[in-house]
Amino acid sequence: MLENKLRAYDEKTSNQIAIISINSDKLTEDNFDQFSIDLSNYWGVGTAEKNNGIAICLSPGLRMIRINTGIGTKHILTDEICQQVLDSIIMPEFREGNYYKGINRAVDEFIRLWR
Image (cartoon, rainbow, N blue to C red; front, side):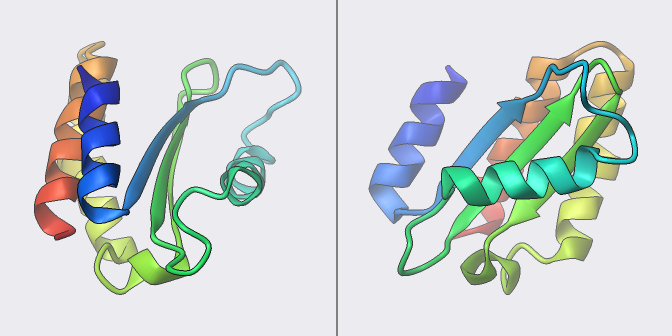
């Protein structure tokens, strides 16, 4: 189960990965990115001292997804790596309607890269 995997990873490393599904009739393509950044910051994904979090924010209704990384995460999980995971793992699964599988495989890849 994905929740157990995320919890175990946090306990082992203190690195935190959050999956956030956003369903709101107030969101648009224009404000999704900023909303997901603000929500990730508000939730405080990662520890305060290490800022070692990653939030995968998705809105199935808008068909949008964004990966937000903390300052302490960016040096390992760069924007380029996150985009590669989106393009090669998440999006192909999402196109087939396999949302859980896409997220689960992406989490596995982030854990593999972020040790």
